[in-house]
Every structure is written in structure tokens, then in C-alpha cells.
Amino acid sequence: MHVLHRVHRWLRPGGRVLDIHPEPEDARVEVRDGNRVTFVGPYARPAIYDNIHRARDTLAGLVGEGLFARERSTVFEVLYHFHSVDAWLAYRVERGTSTEVDAALRARARRELADTSGELLIREQMRATRYRQRHPAPH
Image 1: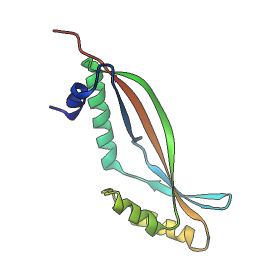
Image 2: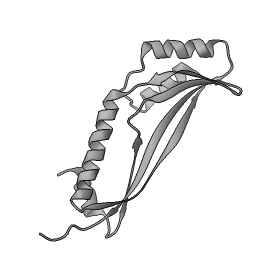
Image 3: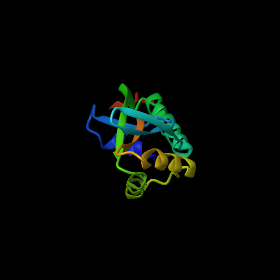
Image 4: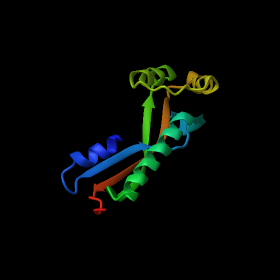
């Protein structure tokens, strides 16, 4: 049984589920020094894109089964701030992230930060979707 079937059973009637995950697209790596923002490159994470698409397909299937109704969805940006590339990499380790950061991207970010008092920015688009529990029609 898929975990979302269990969630459906555990919710009180009409209960809500909030699904939040990154959009399946590259994050933007930038360096900001004062008002100047320099695009360093895309942070590609193809392995998580597949997971996101599978999760969306699973949720769509549960909506199709009549277990949940999609109420509302919104896309928003999360902006991460780091004082160095190493701080970003350490943060990723702490979070248990398994995606690799391309060596060329790390090198470009280090070069951009080298002669500045700026900061490293990671821009990631996120999606939040709220689902309401429904009870399927009897067969």
C-alpha cells in the first residue's frame, strides 16, 4: 500500500495534505555583491526531477481514484544565502542531499566570489499544492 493511501485513512474527514517540492528544473547559482548579481550557472539535478514527476503522477492517480481533490497550487521561489561555496556544500551534506554539484560550477562560483565580499545565492522554484481528502464512491 502506498503511503498516501495510509495518509488518506489517517486523515479526519475532509482533512488536508500539503505537498511541497522543488519544480523539476535547474536551480540558479548566482553571486551577489551589493546590488550586482552575476549568474554563475545552472545547478542541474536530473535524479530528483524523475522523483518529482513520479510523485506528481502518484498524486494525480489518487485524485483520479477520488481519494483526494486538488484545491490549490502555487509556485514560489526559495532563495538560499551562503557566504562561500564550502558553506553551501556543507549545508547540502547536513541535509543529506545526494545530488552532485558539477566541479565546473563549483569552480566558477569560487572564482566569482574570490575578489568580492559578496554572497552565493541559490534560487530554487518550489511548488506547494493543497489536497483535500475525499471518500471514493462505493463500487
